[in-house]
Image (cartoon, rainbow, N blue to C red):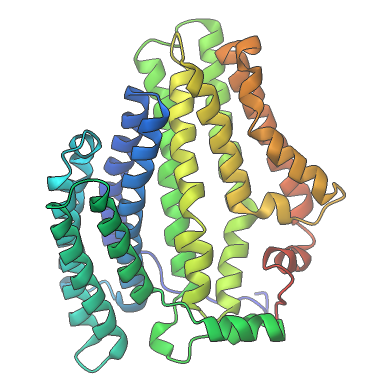
Length: 399
């Protein structure tokens, strides 16, 4: 056995995977929202609803990471949380149309479950448990009160609720961040209270699994086009193949190197909540949503007469994903950084070629482009992992 090998940390539990199934429903509902009304307004609405659901999921990921032991009582708490989360997923469509009462009240109940779970898990004498319990109760109250507020004040209350709960669960230590920048040492971010540290293996795996859920939505949207009879021609079947290859290339871009780098950075920081928040909770949010709009764009491109926005959804989503996962820009390479930066910018403009190529030809172009980016990342990330890690954390050091 490799002497440097360490046993992995806490594993993802079966009850967490069950909870993820509920969020699969939510993701599908959000994707359908964009496909049903392909316009920018739908994208913005989907983003707002996605953010609230994202932080709900993050709350349960943090809970199990710190306190999960896969015991019957904790399983019951997660199963209890899955019920209002499932109701919120089904209530996405009316919420998008302006009737958000059921959606919001369901989210409030999920916060009450989180508050109860932290109160039980931490005990009465743990300051971290009390802090998070109070924050979840405040968040639940703000979500409930927001049902009485008209837009846009309703959404302001949602944002405040998320800020309160996320700040308590993943508190940022600015003094430690200053020490890290001064000393170029990620270990300076390690929390003084061991109870606040996160298990890097579990946290990285949870976010990786959520990205797989969203990658699955790309496959689902592509497959749905075949079920609906939009790929009956030879060109349509070829475009379906392109969509599957695109999903595979998107998977490769993250799981070939970015997933491991993210985990190692969190490990080196001692499970720092500050780093976990920056890399995962906040850092993964837009790339995750990017996969959702790629899925919507692919589904629309496989229809008989795709709208103009379909081309933009696919390429803009790919660009956000490439930039958000960071490895494409950070990897050491014979290809200069400014060339890769230009490639990233070009990704956002590929839709301009759509009308000339047609939907199927454009999908092949986008797929080939993303595959090329994946190849560049693969060629430049292996064999020089230390240098890649240094660049990934902005030259802050790995000691």
